[in-house]
Length: 469
Image (cartoon, rainbow, N blue to C red; front, top):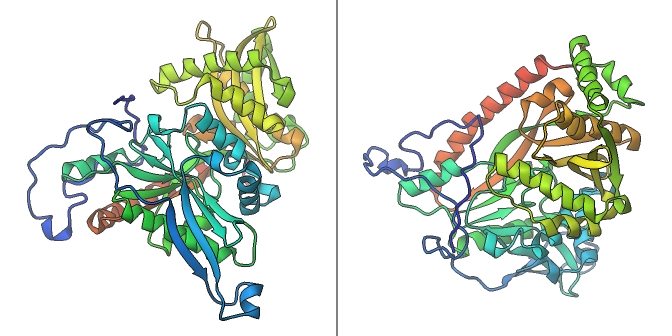
């Protein structure tokens, strides 16, 4: 069955591709008269979708070499065997094994809740990131000869580009305009989540660098054998971004807005670092909340009841109906995720006379609060409530919990004057076709220069006093 979602707008930094985009160099002088039609998202099973070449669940056996492991030092003639395979559901891996890989990849101090088995399995179990919605789980697992899991990677075979927050619709258009197919493609990511973090999750062993390389090699081999157009690793860590450049991936940067905790003891102390006009504006916005008879609450873990999730889903649907046209997440997802993740969930709610009227969903990591979703009662409008629920309450929570950062999600220049400054985000892209790879690579260089310039200008005109960055 085919289903189309409303078209996602591309990044403001993306211009139109030249008419010869993606054309092999030898063919660029040839005029192409066929005009490509607009590409729509096709869910798996559509008559128009492209069937990839099926591959075995096993991606092969690899031998670790060199002197990186104690075992190899003692017996250099014997290599350590690592087998790599695909699983069709994260439920095929125990939460302990997956979370051990994720925690070793980040370190406890940088724990990222979106990489957890609880979050990812909630997406699958409640029908959000599944084959029927164009997100076919194809996770990568690396094991040693004793069946110990040494590394994992969240991977999906996708038949569209929605829910990624790294916009490549113009790339798909270019492929189609030259008679090539862009979908399906592989996406290594956390679905619907523009949060930076490692994507190749490797146990902290003496041979972890080799396991990383084995998984990357397996991902590239899988892309070629499956006869898909490309492999995309979105919102990886900066360290991974640099590593993958040397392994044949194109580099792309984007931009988000984050708040940094400069050891503040209170919200007022944070305000004192702001320019006077910005400080005054924030105080005026916050005064509007009690003036409208609104009460803000921050709920965690067992404090969040089923009625909270039901109300929040209604608020979330109001946002998606007005902004995106179709929801990615189901009602059951919020209940399931909240049940599995406990105190890692922070739900900010607004009440008027004990009735819920708005909410903002956050997850709490090792040193960061991640702001994710917002919504309000569709029947009413409260000025400044969005800023209070999404930005100021998150800042207060970070100060209270002594966390270093608040990540407020994708897009939104209005965040700057409220203390959230631009930071780079990263993605890596591996293309099979060399002609398209070269053209897209040239485009990404130009785009990166634009992003760097915009970030520089935003920082120079930022909301903080001189000398505070």
